[in-house]
Image (cartoon, rainbow over all chains, first blue to last red; front, top):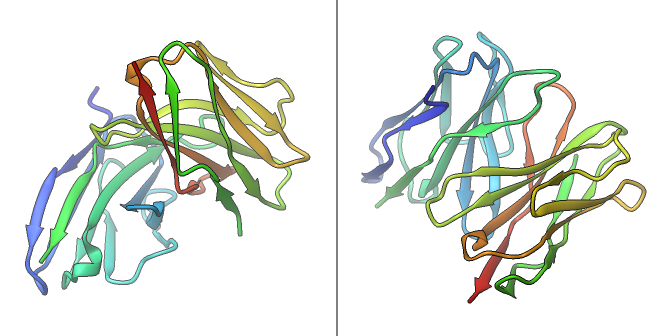
Length: 113
Length: 114
């Protein structure tokens, strides 16, 4: 039982390049989330998926797209990376009502030059 | 919209002493959850403790306990017998019921000094 896994752990991009951050969970959770963490800002929600087949914008969605590929996987895509997207990205998942606790992946440190 | 405020950007405590981290929040909800997460230098987000708003009893987990004051919208974390491994960023977080995202405070950096 690996919990929540994220790939890659580190990535350096040039401005304008694209990439996809992968997230998978093996806990049969319904909800999945993408957050970004910037110094002095805490974690802020980018997008989330309350259940398979649905996605919703969070606080800072601009410049990102997401895909809930199936119940296990939730990917985050940067179509044209910008230096302002330099951050640490966390994926999280949660079961649902009655077990409302989010579990986090190890994070991806992304640098955009 | 909900907001979470952690007014102490940094704190330090001597090993074996007790320290309290403050958190206040703003919401119009009556039922919700509150959490403290720990983020050590490894960057992993680790759940420390969770409180359901409908429970009057304060949550405890070994050396960690909370003081939940619903009317004052206050949710402080007390760490007893502090250990060097407690050195980390601590985030307070709020969540409404259901499949909803967490709202985080900006964090408190705690240093435990030998």
